[in-house]
Image (cartoon, rainbow, N blue to C red; front, side):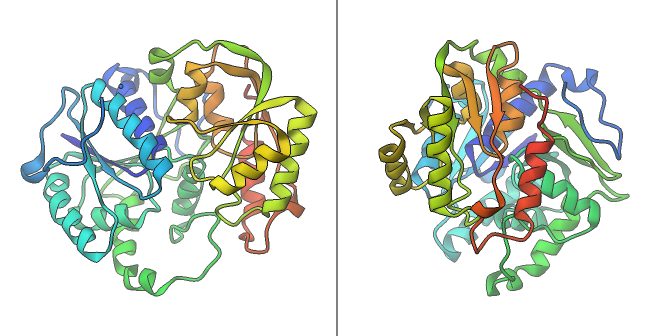
Length: 369
């Protein structure tokens, strides 16, 4: 049995993509990317309850998905919809209320460790997650797969290759007291998330990763998404994809709103697809300033776009969708247009790594449509 730990809708989508690729036999027909070279890639409602003691029940595909539920309402809503799709595919989905203080964390660990120890493979979507790192440190050596969690996958592979501590690219603060306390756990998990002579790590990704020795890469082509949805109806206008770079402290709010207004006017964009982490107040200001219709998707954008309707032109800032939408929309006439982040848009709290990382996200997606 395999166990997947997910904390976001995109992570759960990519677990479904990984399982579809594996069970359809594509993993046997698609060779691993050569080590050292970049990888090239030319639903029912979830219950809030359910025990996992005793190891849980295996699905026909032998995968149990554990949702470590976040607290923000938009993420929870999208995760519930993704959990419905996963259940419809025949997976066992366990919804774990994992946030709420030390007592909740201890209860979650007590419930999940027996399940994870009985698993042959552990699939994770966010190697930077302290929750995931804690669980990995407690369950010992298992076969390990990291599925895409967006552009963070690029940072994860690069940091593993350099032997660095796993730190999110937009973080610039020093280690907190809590992180210092958890440092031994994080170090143990980092060793588990790094390849060694004793174990190999698999990365299932749509991103152009450049893996070190011991990391086996498999291309995520969004075959499940294309099989289940679409092709979409195309509208005459343009759509603009929002980003949470303001919420993460990378981009100045006023600069972002001014840029969105300029892009909407220049390209005739009529709809703004909000990121699930964007604040309601910011979206309200954007609607008033641009006249665009604000869309709050109930599923990851790859599924929304494939289901349609979607604009013939989709504008997006540097983000994962520059890499994923061309795959999900393969065979359609949609053009994905990258909009760079100008250096003067960065906030005073932005990490020194931010500009280079965002430029790399856009640069590695050039040529995809």
